[in-house]
Image (cartoon, rainbow, N blue to C red; front, side, top):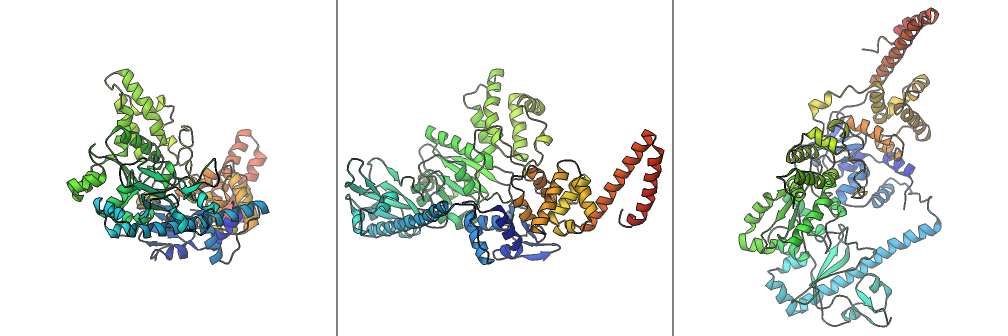
Length: 617
Ligand SMILES: [Zn+2]
């Protein structure tokens, strides 16, 4: 499946991020950059910028950022491979597949075809179920009893799987087609290959759609009290319960309108909520909420509210959701937990109390930070030292799942307070370095991460995600006095022409710098020889796996988007560096009593002063 990295680089060098973002966002030139209203959060004044030189976009409001490929993935919900293929086609480039054997390629092509075929089989079944619903008075009565309108049934493509063992035999010409089994529609008896029957019988059918709208599976609910009440499609090549959310495709528009996603426990909740004016609801599919679910949701909204029944099963599900959500709870996102009274689900709550009361309950939902503390203090006696120690031990693994940032920092303070320790003492106890050191931008938290899943949970020692710090304009101007080497790195990484403008001697000087900067300049020199001038987005791709990838990315991320890197500044830095070295050499010569060398250095100094005095300062 791997697309060679060099191709991604070439593609990013060719594709213009301004043009691509401009297809979806109205952009205006403002200084060196372009700006517009952020498509990822709702805003009235533009805080979304695209930098033509970096080929990166960045939103000061919600923190979204990345390159052209990342933008298309986030904005269209398409996958990495799909976006690369689309873009390549637009720019007349052929995606190479050279690192796969013919057998692998054939298998991949087969997989793609298989998925398309399975989806079309499932779509045919969905259509048949829809027709059956219109013909079954019993099913219609059931829907009416649940208060569902024809309109909501249509929006969600609801259907009915009739009674009888082989209803689908009248839909598909060949009932023995293996695809029917593979798609999960038909069950083949283990003892007798000839015994086949429909999986879904006498059930209200909820087609489960991918974010692109393809039918990938079904949920079926009985009309009465039979067991099992809910039945889902099995795992198939197109359907993975741990990744799919029921109703996400249907909710996309409403997510923007309401500004948050409401995660409920079942499809009936989702449909009923849509009926009652909360079309922003989604549901997991009979599984606990996973990090994949949360990550997927955060592609469509910045705010997630989990709704649970107030019983102990609901509490357990909430714990799972907390663990799944913690790694994604950056400072620009919101995660809350809504516990309804035990006698209610969202549907019955709204019918009993009204939509306004429900909206109010959502507003009052428990924030993630408070819920984390609640979970850690469950069954703990905070009045005793032992209990408080127990609390700290329970809070630690949860806290460690949080990405670094202001939220994590404050929670650390809250936990310390509960344990009756100072923050520093707690840090020492947990083996954390000081906050500032731990929270250094050790790793980027975004660009081009292409929706890769986060590191698996439960590995407390995994590298922390770096904090995203939206640089305010004022603070940005006071760029920390980066070392000369670091600033030079920022410039040559973000301004491709700057490297070209340097002499070979200057290249050498930079390449000879100590690690990590020297090796990074050496690497860049090689890149330049192989690919010529490339924008940062392409360099960033090429850096993947490099020993100092994190250093380079962190340095570039420090450069605020509105600051243009200037090749003249680089020359200036180099002159300062040369002078500093010269001064150090003179000092060494003086200390060693090497008068000859000192005189030679002094001569050089006055010669250099003639050539670079105009540029320095
Ligand atoms: Zn934004």
